[in-house]
Image (tube, rainbow, N blue to C red; front, side, top):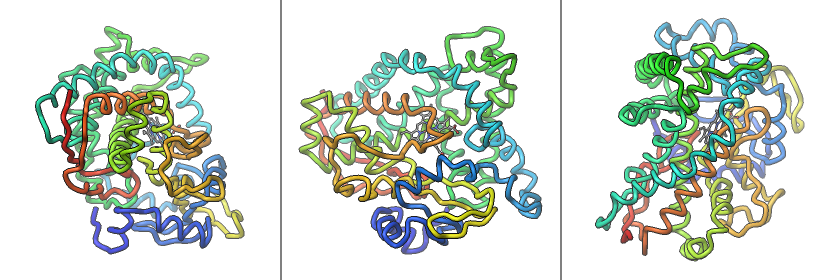
Amino acid sequence: MSVTTDFAKQFIENPYPFFKLAREKAPVQWYQFFNVEGWLITGYKEVEAVLKDSRFIKEAREVASSEQLNSISENLMPAVNLTRNMMLFRDAPNHTRLRGLVTKAFTPRMVDRLRPTIYEMANYLIEARKGQEEHELIRDFAYSLPVMVITELIGVPNEDRDLFRKWSDSFLKFIDINTTEKDWEEAAPDLKDAGNYMRELIAIKRAEPGNDLLSGLISVSDSGDTLSEDEIVATCLLLLIAGHETTVNLITNGYYLLLQHPDAMEKVKNDANLLSNVVEEVLRYDPPVLMTTRWIACDMELNGQSLKEGQVALIALGAANRDETIMEQPEVFDIERKQVKHLSFASGPHFCLGAPLARLEAQIAFEVLLKHFHHPELIEEPTRRSNIIFRGFEALKFKATVE
Ligand code: HEM
C-alpha cells in the first residue's frame, strides 16, 4: 500500500478533523476515498442505521457485475473462496447459520475460563522486561498477548504460535481498502499455508478432542447441521485475523492515550473500578477498527441522497463515535464519562463476536501495565501504521522502571 498523497498522510496521522468536517457537511455523502468511491457515512445515527439495515450487504457477488467477478485472477481464487466461508463476509441466511453454530462453541464461559491464563501470559511478558529501562510496547507486550490468547483459545500448540503471527500480518492485507492486487498476491501463499496447517490440526483434534474452541467447532451441531471442514478452517482464521491486530491496537492506542493524559493514568492506577470505563473510552476515542464497508443491495433514498444498487458504503465507525449530536464534548478523552456510547464493535448482525474477549484482554493488559510500569515517559512520538481500516502504531517506545 502506498501513502503518497498529503491527504493520506494527514488522514493516517489524525482522521478526526476530516471526519468532523465530513459529518458537518453531510453525514451521508459521495466521496472518492483512497481506492474506493462510495457513500461515506459519518453520523452516529446514520452509521448505526446502516449497520442494522439488511439492504447494506457484505457479499460482493450479489451486486458485482460478471465482468468484475471474472476479473479476479486465478491465483487469488483460494483466498476468495476462503472468505466465502467466513461469517464476516456473508449475509443472511448463510451468515445467521454460520454465526449460530460458531456461537454455540465460542461461549461466554469459554472466554471467562481464559481469565487466569490471560493474567499469567501478561505477567510472563512483564517479567521479561524487569531490569530494562527502555521498552517498545508492541514488540514487548501488545503484539504477543493477543496471539498467545487466540492460539490458546483455538487450541494451537505453543510451539506453533509464531506461525500465526506471520499469517496474521499477511491477512491484514485482505481487509484494508487501500490494498492493491499485488499485496493480495503476496499474501496468498500464507493463506494457503495457514489453511493446510488448520486442516492438519483438525485431523489431530478429531482423533483426540480437547477443551478448546477448535474441538468445540468440530463437534458443534444445530438440529443435525454441522460446520464443514472448510467452514471450520475459515472460522479459525477469521478469529485469528479479527482478534489479533484489533486487540494489539486497542492496547497500544489505550496506553498511548494514558501516557498523553497522566492525570487519567494516575486515577485509574489508584482505582481499578475505572478499568472497564477506560477500555470503553479508548474504544470510542481512538477505535482499532476505524471504518468498515458494505455493498448497497438495491436502489434507495438515505438522508435525501439516492443510493444505487452495486455502490459501496464506507462506514466510518471512528467518525460516528465523535458525533456531537449524541454526546457532549466528543473530542475530549474522559475516562470518567458516564455511559460511553460507541460503535467500535459495529452493530446489527455482524456485531463483533469477540467483544467480551477483547474487553477482558484489554482490561487485564491495562491493569498489569499500570501495576508494573512506573514513571513511564514517551521516548519519541510514535508513527501510525499506514492502514486505513485498522488504526494503530508501528511502535510505541517509552522509558519506565519495571517492578
Ligand atoms: C478491540 C478489539 C476488537 C475490535 C475493535 C473489533 C471490531 C469488530 C468490528 C467493527 C466488527 C464488525 C465488522 C463489520 O461489521 O464489518 C467485528 C466483527 C467480528 N469480530 Fe471483532 N473486534 C475486536 C476483537 C475481536 C476478537 C478478540 C475476536 C475473536 C476472538 C473478534 C472476532 C470477530 C468476529 C468473528 C467478527 C465477525 C462477526 C460477524 O460477521 O458476525 N473480534 N469486530
